[in-house]
Amino acid sequence: MSRRGFTLIEVLMSLAIFALAAVSLGAAYSNVLMSRLALKQDEQRLDDQARCRAALLETPGFDDVESGGEIYLPGGRKATWQGKIEATSVSDLFAVQLTAEIEPPDGGEAEEFTETRMLLRPTWSIPADRQKIRDEARQRLLQERGYQEADGNSAFISAPTRGKKLVPSNPGAKGAAARPPASTAPAGRGATPGKGAPAPTNRPAAPAPAPRPAQ
Figure 1 (spheres, helix red, strand yellow):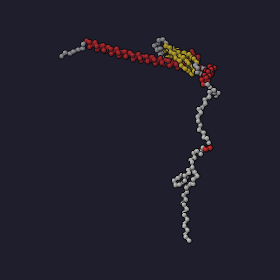
Figure 2 (cartoon, rainbow, N blue to C red):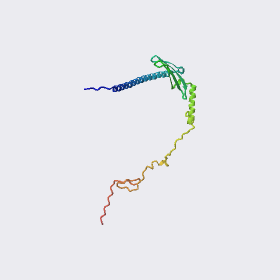
Figure 3 (tube, rainbow, N blue to C red):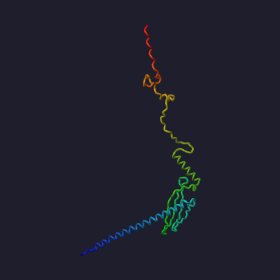
Figure 4 (spheres, rainbow, N blue to C red):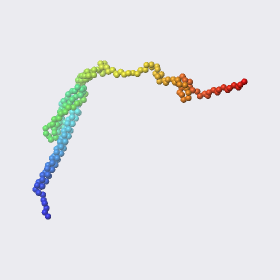
């Protein structure tokens, strides 16, 4: 009994299929590794930015924020940050632009990070500037509303809506309208006596006089 083996074409096709599968699996594995590395780098970058942001928020002085500082990061790295403060149209509210240069974990060139945050810092305000901002806001509200709420001298009067009031024509007859009219029907059994009608009594009728005997 003869046995039939694989031909050269079948062997070559099998090798080609195995090669394509190996390349596909290798590319997928490489993509997974690259994704994990990119995710780790993003987490590290976000953590570094959060540390620079915390350094800004923990600095109370106006001049200290303008001059900036340095912080040490994990892995022997270092970051340099600086803040630029600008006043806003709201009292005690400032727009702070944070600029930081963070060293990457691989030791390459430092990456620059910039963001703007709104901070409420009453200690940074100058009393004269604060009063000027409040006066401008008060004047702006006066122009928009048309009246002042502080002194009560209002140039805008909001009149209430006038409705119809039901006032009785004769106040003395308040209870007279609810009084039922007198009944003119004669009182009898089962009848309700009205005003002015004699009330029924339970007295028996008087007996008739006896007839007189003839003379």
